[in-house]
Length: 231
Image (cartoon, rainbow, N blue to C red; front, side, top):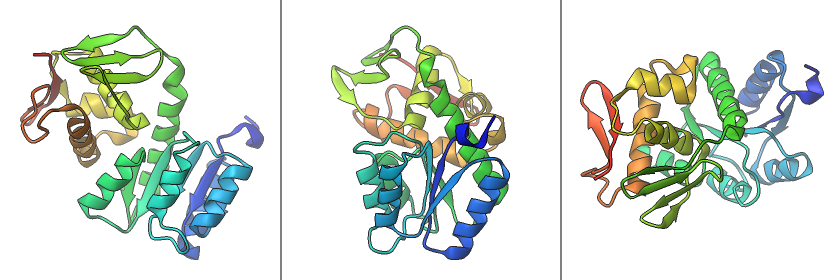
């Protein structure tokens, strides 16, 4: 595969050391990289050459990373992997609500970041494999249009949220283990990333459940995994 046909990655970070490190490692894996040091530069680069994936810091000068994400999501559906020193759950939730596909906390391992980049690109590439519509209780999932309705109300999900829900819906009323979900949705590099799975389950409940604190549909099987059920 030629370099020009590989996915373009936009890397946004105001720390020059991290920007160089991430850029060099992505390029070593064969990805062309567009680096940016602040929010306005990131949006300009994305507009000039739309990326296939974005690695985005949140603590950016001139324009906050969350605002960059919000503006990107107005027109760009490329997966966004947040790479941030903010480890607080509210900040993670904000990023996921705005359409981030994954969240990596600094300090980070380069192997983990590269694995998450690969996983996000795999999920994006799998979008063409549409199946029949799936109905589970009040949930209607149209795989051809990638549309999710709950009691007739459209719910907007990030790519990762959608893929997780789709797998749960296709296997409705089955107990799916943590390992199964991580392998099927994130890929083999994510076999023990329970934190990521729990974060996205929480996000799905927030968007789908009448009372997320007392879920009726997306149930936890303690110590095992999760099950999506209808009423």
